[in-house]
Image (cartoon, rainbow, N blue to C red; front, side, top):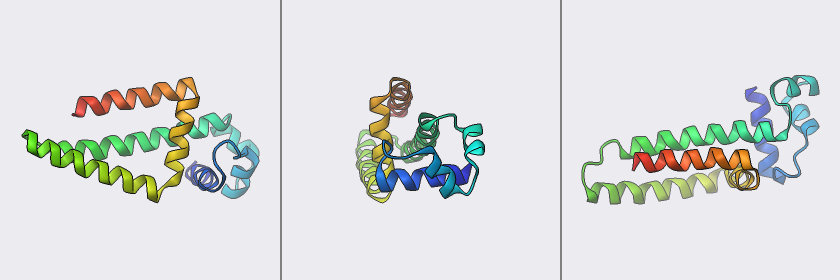
Length: 124
């Protein structure tokens, strides 16, 4: 599964999620197409898994940044640092931008993104 997700992530970074094909993911991951479909029935399932992964990483980053905040100035500093961290992550991992765009185009994925936004609001 990790090889499949890594292959999908690389392909999305290279050509975008719309152009990614399941056969390409299987080939790059070194698995049969049947094995890929066993874990991911369609492209949307791959994007969902990657979105969940980035969501979990983001929530952990936010929670860690806000853990020691005790006043308004600390919140301002932590929030400013988080903006820089997110900007750096988006530059370092262009696949995140494509996945975020994919979440906006798909209703179920939009729900995942909305739940993430609400969780982040709770942290704040």
